[in-house]
Length: 112
Image (cartoon, rainbow, N blue to C red; front, side, top):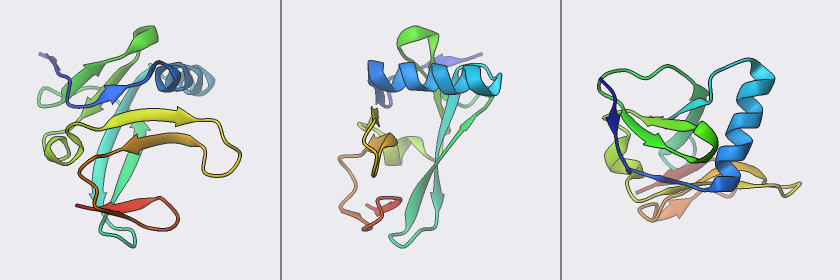
């Protein structure tokens, strides 16, 4: 049974991009956001299309998109916003995490 949650916010622009990427890959528009140990600042985000599990937080977004957050990642990303930036440098899907106290120069990892 899926649990609907608002652990994170997903902007409409991010939801549209997730749907476009899913269609291009032939996947369902269900994106998993996971925090993993690593990177130069301690943690990094891992984004991948996936299937929900019973323990996931399921965040509904625009355009029929759903974002999954696992139990371990939820406290770290709580209050964050997943957005899409179409800049040539540093663009793409990006998590804006108010709990991150430091981000590395490349923007790929963070610490809390």
